[in-house]
Image 1 (tube, one colour):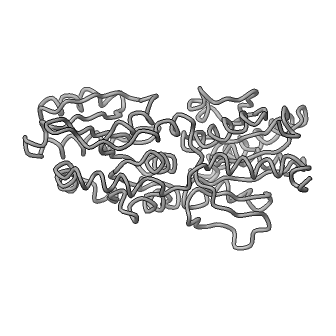
Image 2 (cartoon, one colour; image 1 turned 120 degrees about the vertical axis):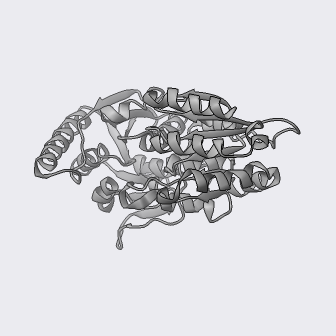
Image 3 (cartoon, helix red, strand yellow; image 1 turned 60 degrees about the horizontal axis):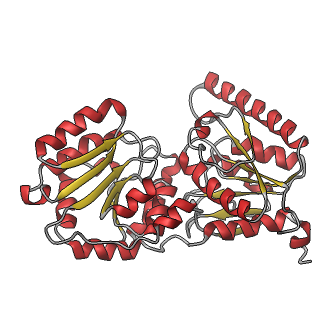
Length: 374
């Protein structure tokens, strides 16, 4: 057990599963090494933290100061200030060895509090573009770890360690990675998984069923679709697949998504950092549709990690329609060797063992003896 074992490391993340899941993966690794974990998040982030292995939790208010008019910006500033003072109070009551921010606006007041209290901290950026919350605090951190080989909008002068570690994936993803890609058996069905990230994607609910309905019957009858669909759209999507004679499984959320990815022969998804990383770790071919309104268009950068390697087909949202999707699907669903090639090209395109590599960095700043090489 390491010298700092039993002390607390604070992890801050919020907003979406894309921020929470890498933090959860690091928490799992640090717990294995004997550390205790304090999770700092907001109400939105807490929805994705049901399985987060935190010993303690602090729920704060947070909001983006970049969205809305003057009143909304003022309210966001008040929320962030309130979050900052709550974190300062929580930190002062505890022995915090180090803090790590994973983005989302709960990270900003948490890292600001760590800096004021002289607690060593660093940030991890999951996307190919440094997010705004991370941008605000990265300059004072001991390290800036990032998930992809290219990190846009990084500070030009950075005094800490800047290192590509990959995106930490949860244990359930690592277990799914042991499943080899299987081409459909002769006469068997091809499994198509469709999901839009932790928030779902209405665009997929309209475009994907229409595209599949236009495919030849010989292709449709050999297809099984598993799709994440928002509650109000479930009936519409199910009726569309029934009319097309396509076997389907529809649900608003899959809590076993990594296993679903492993079981699929093709995936249609957005290009969030966690999605791209899990596709790379598990090794599955995909059609990626970057979210057009994503801050700084970071999802396009994420998607390139797979599309440039031949592991994914990237379709811009403006070009994602039934006709363009049907053409891509026909080519992929009728060429099983192409699917196998793409699966192999996707596997390993994001650095493996990211949770372990990031935990090593965190322990260096959290444990003075380890930092000094004692």
